[in-house]
Image (cartoon, rainbow, N blue to C red):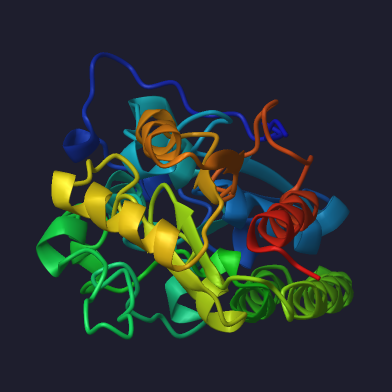
Length: 330
């Protein structure tokens, strides 16, 4: 899904860097600056925030996103034009800690209506100890050192930022986003409230589908590329075993690869999941060495032509189907 670029960005003269651009003078930072009849200008940091803005804002907002389709959001670097775009926003939706460059630019933007999704729900720690103990006393999983990513995890004190992959937590974030749009654009508060309620109801239906669909499975363990699915696993009684930690680009140690082979045999794991925006090389190698199948479990950090669905709801339903197949749902 391509983001709608309805808000013109400022032209920056000369070669400028992030630290030298002063944006507060051109910021549209509250509802009072929004011209009558204009749409609320919302900038989203990456797809999960873009989806909320578009679904809740509807026809009353124009949404731009800093992370283009196909770009791995964790490694995003902003150019001066994107930094200027931030300064023109009425509202910025982002998830603190997952994109350090965005966090820095928001701080410098001067925009008052900034909504941090991590403040709208409770974050937990997943990925620093990926694994579980078997009856033989052996503990499988990453150590904190293996899973730690200073850029992503360190800024959140080791807490997992992937809250959007739990429909219940994502609904909590949706409610907060809706309230923020109401505050920024009170003239259209009724529409934002109606759209929020509709989305929360739809996310509730998704939660029910996951609960029912994963209630009776042959195994509860799944292996995936990076530790993005901790909230989903906890919500539905599953065990996530990640090849990498919270950082999708980190490489597993030989010891971790051996552990995963043992886990797969012990827990009757038949599938190793990879994802659309990160390399699938390690996942496919582990699967081939262990005689396992591979499939996609999408962390929904972006929508591309390779995504199994056109939006968050469709891709999450595809994820459910993939998990049901891999875990032997009855």
